[in-house]
Structures are given as structure tokens and as C-alpha cells.
Image 1 (cartoon, rainbow, N blue to C red):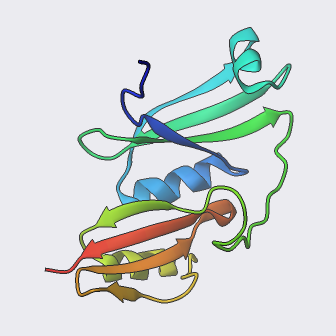
Image 2 (image 1 turned 45 degrees about the horizontal axis):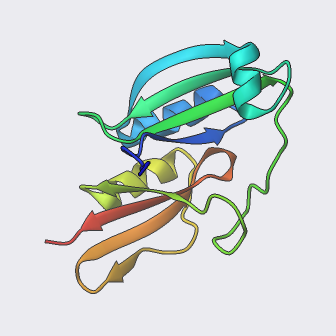
Length: 146
């Protein structure tokens, strides 16, 4: 029986690759690589003829599931809803466990990234907040309460 081997990565298309990369590097991800992708192989896989994109692959320190950010030069990207809320169809959020939620939220706020709602606490186990990052990407940040 065929089965999934591992969860490799999440891909997100962005308008400003440098800004999105800086945002996620600021959260602690590390750049694994950056390259341009075009040609018959990628056109076949994504179903877009004559495509040309630049991608950055990021991973957490020590490895794990990656985050692939892509910016399309050809064809140009189609804007989504930068103010999408959790009940809209599509990618809802990407989540990270962090070790100091308030410090991260303060730093993101100083960079112009604000909370979607507020800081919530779940059963005295988790403290969580959602931040709207570049291109409207919602990032869920969770801190375990000791």
C-alpha cells in the first residue's frame, strides 16, 4: 500500500520575496537555498506553460518541515485577499511553536506586523496569537506555558 513518507514543505506564493524571506528568517527559520525555476519540468508539474519563478526554501534550525516561498516573474502573480480571515477557503495559517511569544510579538509589531485578534490562552497549556505577515499570510505563534 502506498503511503506518505514525511511532511516535506508548505509552498506560499508571495509578491515580495525579499520581504517575506526576511519576515520568516526573523522568526528563526534558516534559508536552505534560493534559485530560479523554469522549463518543461516545472511547467508540467504546476500546469502553467512558460512559467518563471524564484523560490526560497526555509527550514527550522536542525531541519524539519520546510517553507517554500515563491515569486512568479512569469506569469505575474494573481492577488488574493490580503485581509482574509480564518473562515475563508484556502490556506488558513501556518503555525510555529515559539519560546517567548511576547518578545516575538513586540518585534513583529515594531516591523509593522500586527495581531489578527488578541493573545489567547488555552487550558493553561498554550498561549497563542495570530499575526498577519507579508501578503496577508497569517502566522500562528504558540508558546507552551510551563
